[in-house]
Image (cartoon, rainbow, N blue to C red; front, side, top):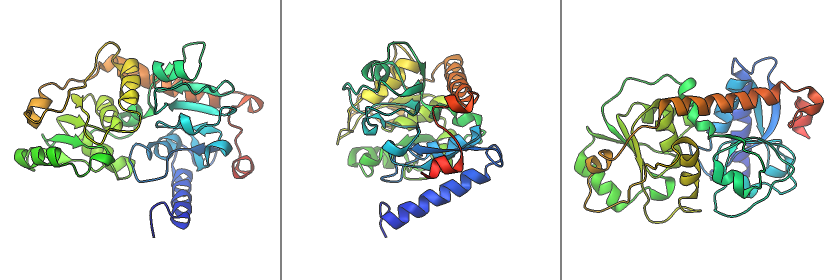
Length: 299
């Protein structure tokens, strides 16, 4: 049975719903909210929405964008109809194109490029919620290795794989992004440095204060580097960890270009995301951008 098959997808959604209900922060008085995240293929970045929200008292129930009341982690806003009236929390656009969302309740967006292109008149909270992972998973002991985090489109990749073989397993760990969030996050968090073509490889490194560098490979990702530029404009404004992939460079050469995002900026970004979500949940029931309750979620 394929991952995207209807029965398997439904089973996955029910399993995640049950896991969220069992999370201590959400147990008993958690708010059940119809939420959208990308579920077309396995990817730890997309898995962050159902993993993170229960830790803030929200039980997400998967729904397609038109029926959702909360849009979560990822480059999702192109999927959101322009008359959407629910909440956006740290989401971003995939492409560098206008996609106005005038009726949405914007708690936060990934970065200022997304904010401009969805037509926000006032500056919102910026940040990708993936930057919160270190607040919920303690960093494991470092294994001293470089974490190479290729996007799913870059597995396998001949030039990158050759450099990994040259460096050896004792020096490099290749992180499979097609894993559940907690597993992939722990593998990245155990590294001494990160080389990534996956945005959430970079964001996870920033969450734990790990030096990182990002690069691009063929085939190009959908939207090109827009989502990286959007995120970095929020967390490392005026600076980038991007380095072109050059066949003459070793992994150690790339790591020599890596650096960690400013810890105070990362902390402020995480605080802003948490405060935006808490502020929405504290509103009177009639003002919630995502009316809670099981019956509302199941409509």
